[in-house]
Length: 135
Image 1 (cartoon, helix red, strand yellow):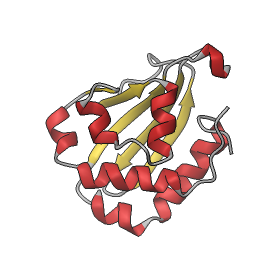
Image 2 (cartoon, rainbow, N blue to C red):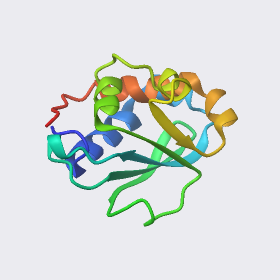
Image 3 (cartoon, rainbow, N blue to C red):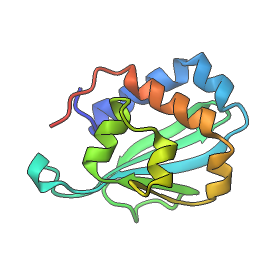
Image 4 (cartoon, rainbow, N blue to C red):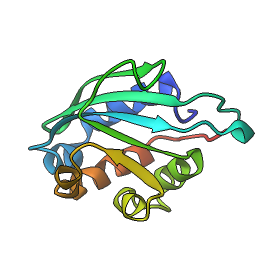
């Protein structure tokens, strides 16, 4: 399944909502996200890919692909280059270290995210459960 497509997002949310480890790690988390992949013309990504997820107490209670970053206001935006997203999904880049090294960008309450590193890592582990193809 190709990363950043509606089918990939749907599969990710289904897997996330079935993942007991994520549910436990994110039991107290409340906050919605835009996950944004910046354009990469070499990979055929001509516009930002914008995925919305409403994460609430260990479950995703809403999700959708959005036409652009202005389509929905959220508590958090996690964004970066396609190559960095690929490294995160493949397990070669930790999502929190990516923030600290400025390879990824976070808009929102950074302290809240830093208190939820276990949940962030389980979110990524869940994405790694999906057979993902990268253009």
